Structures are given as structure tokens and as C-alpha cells.
Length: 196
Image (tube, rainbow, N blue to C red; front, top):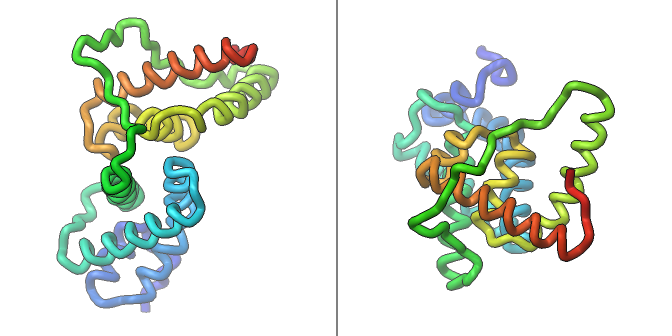
């Protein structure tokens, strides 16, 4: 008998499709914390996060059983995409005013993709402190901006991965990050916070 714990998420998904229910239990165990923390961070309400999480995994099961998953990509990214779609459906159902899209003349020329510096322990400590301050400011951002910042800095996803997960272009992802940074700079200035 195959040891399920040694299987990748992709292999487990295919094993579940093949009738192995224990494979799905292990998939859920491996992915639930990451997916739930993402959902909770975006919706900012425990009860809503629980509902969205359950809806996400109902859709995951449904899509797996309908054969809509192929092992060509990462299972975790596939589930994140489903979670994102469920969150957006929830926002639409709430007729939320929180969704802010960039304008058509969005200028991305001054956005730099500089990662976190790991040149020294001191720089790492400073970066961790800055990320904590950023996390506080992020709670005031509209959902799409908060989502892209979370994916970029806390889940270390590339803009290409963010675009694929959220179903938008890379330019839209970059634009949302730009607006998030501008909004956080404004909030930091208004609250006398130094973020760099």
C-alpha cells in the first residue's frame, strides 16, 4: 500500500479522484492553515472566514470529482485561486464598496520590485519590524490591495503567481500593489510612522 504521507499534494489530489478519501483528508490537513489564514486576512471576520473556507473546500471537492483538476500545476495555487474566487463572490454578494481598481492611465514606471534584503541580521530585524507596521496599515486597505500585499510579502508569491491566483493581468496586480503602497505611505505619514 502506498504511503500517503510521502505523496505530493498533486498526487494526493489524483488519489482522491481515484477514490481514496484518506488522500483528501491529508490534503485538507496540509493546506487548511495557509488557506484559512489567507481568507481571514482578506475578509477580516472569523465567522465569514469560516463560511468562505467551507465554501472553498466544497468547491475543491466538487471540482476534483468533476475532473477539473490536472496535476500540471501546484495544488496549493489551484486551491488559492478557488478561495480567491469564493472571496470575490462573497464581496459581490455583499455589494461591497471596498473594491478599488486602478485607473486606465495607471503609471507603473516608479514601482520597483525590490525584495527584502537579507544582507545582514540587522537588515532582517529592521525588515521584520517594518512588516509588522505594514501589517497594521494593511487592515485599512481595500480588499484587492490588501490581498496583493499579503500574497507578495507574507506568502512570497511573484506578481505572475498573484495575477494567476486572482485572475487579473500582471499589470493589474502591479497597479494594486502601487495603490496599496501609496495608500500605506499616506496612512504612515498621517500616523507619523517610519516604514523604512
